[in-house]
Image (cartoon, rainbow, N blue to C red):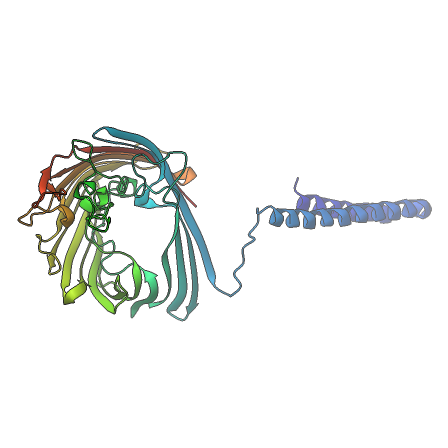
Length: 449
């Protein structure tokens, strides 16, 4: 019996005893009334004690966190969320191989804080998203000590305030996504966070390729007269060859229109990498459902002002369809018009087919196969300007466990780069290099709260 029910029962008992006493024979009332009064006093003391126990239980619940203990200083809605996404990565290329315990860069661990306040149809608020990667899969390198995590960072992905209205759209100022960010990552498959999205480099981006003789590609160029490397020693990392070219988060002014028939248009003025002026980007998003088909798409254009007055333009888009049968298809691609480089323009293409089912009652099961082809690393271009060709294909499986807010996953990828030309010290022209394929397998979980 709960404390509240016990209290009510005792109170009812007191009343019953009192009624019995009043209903007894007149001759016996003198002695009986005295006994009843004593019983009533004892019962009242017991009720007072139980009331004290209830208050102590409330205080204990608050002290142990079993009751809400976080209260915003201001009168706003405060939403706190986050996730941890860690796993075990195995990678090998040429004669190097290693196991790593990593934070999956495709869905890095993070904390999210959203504060909102309504005034009429308007909503104003603040957003803070802090990434907390420990040993990021985009930072580990062959030969680093597996027992000493590296690349541990706290990255403020979003620090901004916003105001929005269902008729007038949203205005946001601060650090966050630009119009180009994520325009190449629309994906309904349910496997993208596992390293099976169009950013195929996420699960092993920091690993460096070596040629078939085991030589670092950047190290071949040697040093100049001052002893400085002729080529930066991190330009041969995997993520330099596999790039969707869709921009990045920056401090910016962002505006998005309300959705009309599923479409929304947005625009951004963002700080440049060198902090000199603002650079524009424009994008759109689309989402709709019809006949049990779900469709989403996004696209963007952005301009990067490089040194010497050169303007580089990038065009990125992606779309994904989920059918009522669980079969899904995702396409993404990018192209560019670059004035800052004498090499060919950068481009990329990504395609994925997947299947999702609720056959297991613990949560959705999703599997996918994807393929990527791109040209992006001009540090290893051929003498005629042709960029190295990067290709990758991957297999992924994800099992959701709804009761635990957990997603278990495994992703295996093969990365290959061809037409790689390196500047070799002592030779005038770049020399083509034979580079073995790199293989990576990541097994992990994403737990959300």
